[in-house]
Length: 437
Image 1 (cartoon, helix red, strand yellow):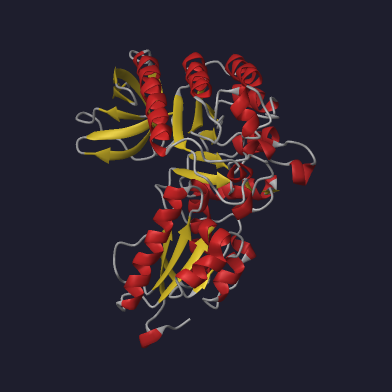
Image 2 (cartoon, rainbow, N blue to C red):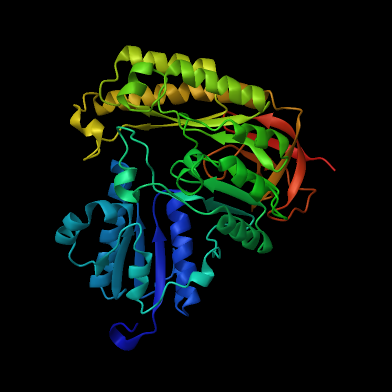
């Protein structure tokens, strides 16, 4: 494709939102380059004449960031810095008709499953032989592996099914091929992601098949860690825990968004589970996989949340002592069931409650981290900062969890290496330590 000035096309792919979006961008980059098109990810140079913005439409803040980014590149187009601006992803999928009217300067809009149509504007074809191949945008020693697309869950607050569609699992064989390709290129840690990883396989194999997938991935040579994200608590397949306990390269780590600790709120959220059932599940997880780190997320200020509901959530968090926890303020999303309710918790109360949760979690996290002092842990080295190295334990996922600072004066470590580190210090969300030879 030629653009004005007859410049050779160079594409800058800009990614907003979650790791699932990042994988989509990596697949797009791989397809573009496979078609002989020069493409980069989030270039800081002004040398790309075409921009593809992969947007997020999850909550208000994310939507605003996406719109601001689109407007910034539209301005660059009007200034002659870029020739074409294309928009894809969740925001575009959900609000395409409105956005076309509001921002007509965008050259074309694409949804979350429009990759082939997007490639056609570059006179490129979707190359099936590249399935399982990925150009990574993060350091190559870890990679996200998206095992399915879409979601069939009826959560009242969530617009993801509107943007991502119904759940579609990827075949085990295809995922194993991708894992082998990643391992061949230096990936040592796989981060399993999906809108709902525990639903995996129901459409393809007529049963929840996450445990079989994990076994097959665990057998891939060169993969030292496999980390499981975004497990839905209702209907959790307990055979996954058996695989996690018996396979040393499956991390003792589980990301399981629970959203609340009040049964009344869980019912309003249409989560299909009670607080009591949740507590039973957490006890089962911890008994079957001793030492596991559980990450969860909560929502502050969903419609109908009273002071009593919030206090119940605080009690639940205090009792559960999650190793990792995040919280976000409820966002009133059109066309969701919760949108039919009155958004009756003021913004300042939502924030106060979120702050209180994080203050509680800071105390819990500090106590758990201080208990690590004196332990020797296996750590993957992510980067070097100043004279020190920054790494993670098997209990920590990139970007969202704790980091461990390794005193680097007497060590030469390579990025992506595994080292044994004795923990010498702890703060609320980080550790420090020394390499043990």
